[in-house]
Amino acid sequence: MLIIGEKINTVNARVHRAVEERDASYIQHLARSQAEAGADVIDVNVGGLPGAEPELMQWAVGLVQEVTDLPLAIDSTDPETIRAGLAACAHPESAWANSVTLEEERLKGILPLVREYGCTVVALCIDKRGVPSDAAGRVEVAKRLIDEMQRWGIPLERVYIDCLIQPVSVQPIAARVSLETIRAVRAALPGIKTAICLSGISFGLPARRVLNRAFLPPLMEAGVDAIFLDPLDHALMTVLRASRVLFGEDLLGLEYIAAYRAGQLE
Image 1 (cartoon, rainbow, N blue to C red):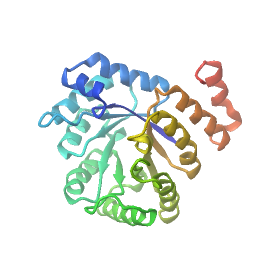
Image 2: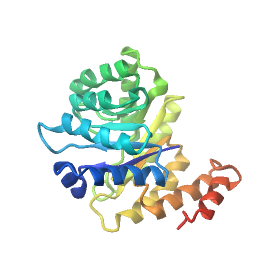
Image 3: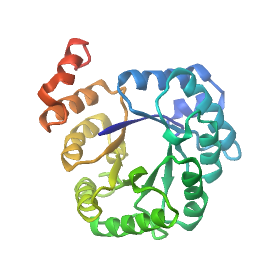
């Protein structure tokens, strides 16, 4: 299972201010810290500054690449911003385009870039009607997304289906639906990888980290292949390392023991 570090995202007020003020040191601190904490991929999102997003994405990608060699997830709803980010990557073939949906504008704007650069793509189970409320609806969208990938000649091993998480503050059965969707996608589309954004489950509630930590083991047990999360939450990373042992991903607990000896368990 891959860990995508989610911290460089302007939905966070501190990051938004850093991007707006071109605070290079803070952006690089977040990138370096997430890499050191165990992230496999670093997500970069500089949205919320109309008209400036492509240029800011190039700026941020350049900064992050100065402090880590990890692959970057170029995170935007705007195809031109994704193009700018991929163009700024030293190794765009190892980057991620995050994300595409079944909405026509994003399909036509992003999938040609995925094909051109040979990168990985995250595809959300969303169509023009929005987010399906149940697992069956999301699987139906996932199947159509896979059809689009094949139509564009994109190798399916480079596709991650984002099974989506809605806040339980809005949809009480959101956690159950996400788990059912992961299992259903794996059953209906053998070999297709799945992804999820962990922190979406807790939006709008207090003590969000508690909910995120509680939901991580069920997601891992369901078999999700990649999770967007906060690797700087040390307790969350402890839960992750322990769960890897329990679910047989860390054979004999060797990584867990190494983390214990390094003082990384909380």
